[in-house]
Length: 242
Image 1 (cartoon, one colour):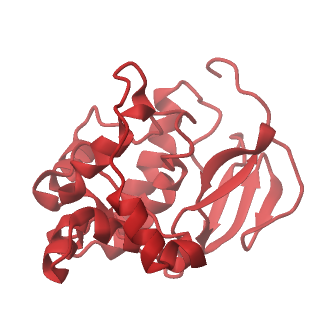
Image 2 (image 1 turned 45 degrees about the vertical axis):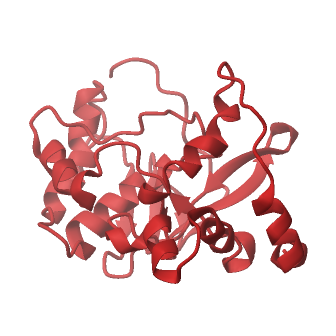
């Protein structure tokens, strides 16, 4: 970080010409792609702001400072001791708000899920969606209508279980599997993602923590208490409907 902050190093890196990219290699095209998208590349912050205004784009901040967009991006990436992350919404962030996403969520066929299923885990952190649904949509959203808390809970529990044929869970009633989250809704806070290297062979992934989960119970066993892992592992692979 100290080296990257040196004016001479900064100037040398920003002054380099990009090597020609190989069209057949996706990640070869990423530098040019990012450079062309600074108008929709946002500072995410901590706690993260997933519905930012236009003045939070790298391009807008660069214009306000009188700097080139890539110079601005370079400096932003050095914040938080190099842990700062940017957000690049690829789809659905129309007119810089979540109104379209709200419409999709309210559609009878809409499903809240994790579409990548673990892919691109060094670039995308879908694991935050359940917490985000509870914080942003039921409590914190200020730039448009929110969603009822009970509706969001049902959407992520009963409705999801029913969709996938998991009839033994999704509601709190006698005879059902005891999978329960006890949540302090007022204190629930989603933290900014952090890069960790704990996959096999030192592989990279994004880890995103949250505060406000009092207890997590799986099949009746307490697996987490105030955010701390208890070591209990009652879960098992689910095969087919039940």
